[in-house]
Every structure is written in C-alpha cells, then in structure tokens.
Length: 138
Image (cartoon, rainbow, N blue to C red; front, top):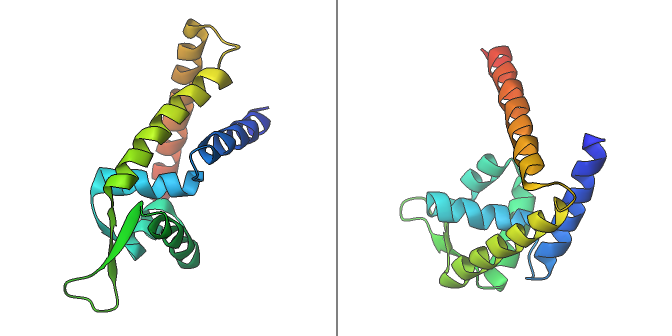
C-alpha cells in the first residue's frame, strides 16, 4: 500500500507543479541552488543523484525559462557554475505554495492529529532505515 500511495502522491504532485510549468526534478535543482548557492553542474548531479545528460536537459529547460543561468567557472574553462535567477526564486515560492495546497488536498482524509501521527511514524521509519544504511556502509 505504501508503494501505491507513494506513486499516487508523485502523480498528484507532478500534476500540481505542472500548473506552474515545472517538474519535480526542476524543483529539486531550484531548491538545491537556493539552499546551497551557485554550484557546478557536476555537483548538482551528485547531490540529486542524477546522471549528467539528465542534469544538462533540466538545466537547459531552467535556462530557457530564465529560472537559472550558467556562468563560466572562473578557474575551470570546461565547467559552468549554475545560479538561480530572481525569476527562479519567484517560481520556487510559487512551488512552495503549490506544494502546501497539494499536501492539504492529499492528506484531507486524515484529521490533523492523524496527519501528525503519520508524519511522526514516517520520520521514525526513515531515521531507522537511514541508521541501518549508515551501519551497513561502515
């Protein structure tokens, strides 16, 4: 059921973001740039676990829409540094509003107390699994 619910949530979220002209992966890049500042393309791929050609395609979209821009790296002639633009920051704010509304709609079948419990249980599961992953890698 969790897998099915996750798939439904992903579909609804992607549809909601489409209303402002972006996909979840575009939002991931904008969110990363806003949080960490300008980054080289390769670092974006590493942080979001995306392959190079996917990063390039997504950045092409963001640049075409004037949400991000590539600037030459000051010391590495082969690299570009990606910057979020003021339009990108505005789109990010729109996405946060869309995300909030989408979340409200998706979880409407639960009371606020049930939503909090659900969040608490999911957080506990994630933390438990992340601990196991860390232990396995050590």
